[in-house]
Length: 190
Image 1 (cartoon, rainbow, N blue to C red):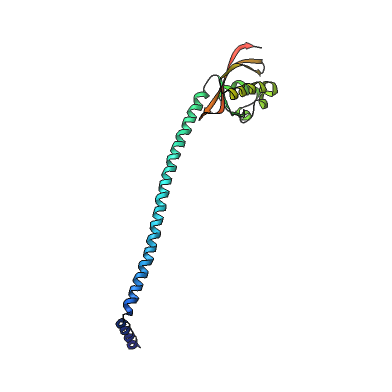
Image 2 (cartoon, rainbow, N blue to C red):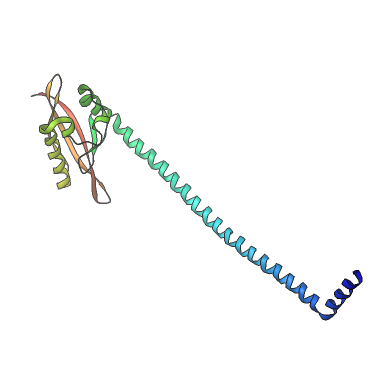
């Protein structure tokens, strides 16, 4: 049997089939290796693209962190003002107020910022006073200008307190996006 296999091998080699077989095996291996190399190269491009996107995301995250710090600085700079200050949306919802606003106007009513944020003036001050505030806010929005005038608030146990109020539009990219306000209490009693 060994002799017979030896003779078949000699016949295959002599006929040139062996070199064809070896060549086919070599080409098949190169073809598979080439496909694997193409796949690896494709993944390397994907990895490079992902690395670039990751760097861009990290850059954006750093910019957002800086923006948060900038916003916090602006908030804190107004937070310590002795005068009541606030920011409202264009639909006249209270978005932010400083400590002086809360301590002077809300705490005596047993309220806090949380009771006022995202609500309109009428839900806190009632219809008469709330509508007066909102009328002046609308004037700021319609005229895109500063409004200065007198407003008042009922303040227990003192009754109506007179306020000198300044309201102005907050603009971004040439569009009014909110209203900023400041109230200074007067020694006038009504």
